Image 1 (tube, rainbow, N blue to C red):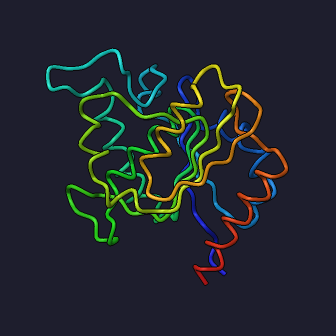
Image 2 (image 1 turned 135 degrees about the horizontal axis):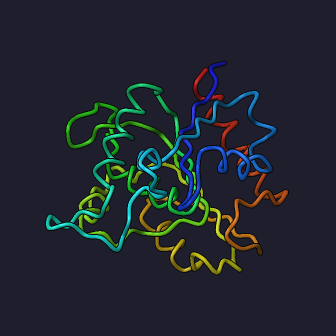
Length: 206
């Protein structure tokens, strides 16, 4: 049985190491069967801390660091892939949503759709308001993949309504709510459902 590979994207002011710790309660028992590949936002090497900044649009309508992030993600798929799925928390979940718009629905990558993956899991995500990102949301075929959305009903950082808006971008989203805040919940029901979801994909790769 081939191990699943999942690209994992941290939140704003986060890092690969921080995300690994945040993920452990939910995914720790699965690490023997799944390769979780946590990566840093490329701007961290320059002292920055996010995948992009929404308050700094350039003259071309792109948000600061977005092009750097996009190019690095494509490189990661080439260097460390293939990836079966993508997991993201907070801004990383928003990025996961954007990557679906860059996804090649038929698996045949191109300049317009340079990456390929089959499912997405997002915790505390939201839609980006960056003008440069709207064309990605318009690529509806990229969002026809199974998706799980972990939403804290007490989240004061990302409103549950904003996470639901991101979920609505996908064709058949599965909403898993929990009473917590802006966290990667490891509530028993969520842990069981996510394990079952990944187990189904793992069985499909044999």
